Image (tube, rainbow, N blue to C red):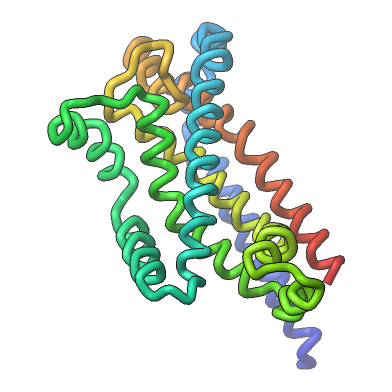
Length: 259
């Protein structure tokens, strides 16, 4: 059998296996119970407009705050890690290793309960989310930005220096803008991860006006006894993440075309 023929048989077997799995699920699932649990029209209608005006809006705001803070701190950490000053590199490495190894859940708990005990002050929910998501996200963003900066050809900085630019000016004006173009797809992926991690704010206790999607869905689940609010919350997450995923693919395609 030729390699081409073998590949066709293997591909056909995979399609057949997928078809069998779909048919088995369709025959074995209790669609009446699934429909009653997840697709209750009355419960679904009762979620609006609060799920949009409160939960979805707060999720977007929490994510934007965390990503903005994490991006700024991550850029500083990336430059520290590339610095010729050894203590800067040590501090950046220590920070990155610590916050990449600690779950975001513990960071939320530390800021929500540890800081008030230690310093007698309590952050509001928006500040807590910004700091928690930003501190964790900065560790990953720093490594992404460092890789992007190192991916810029060294000749770019050398050419800028030959034109009379200082090292710092060349980094800000020439290297960093090119690095951001390189790392836009992984940065967008990090934004998607922070969107989902914003749900951890529920640990701190929220007023109804501060609910994000996960907390809103769980609260409505307890009130209605239906899983429909969870489905609505999941669809709202997709409203955020699917366009971001499409953006990642477009950026990757554009980047590949440019190369």
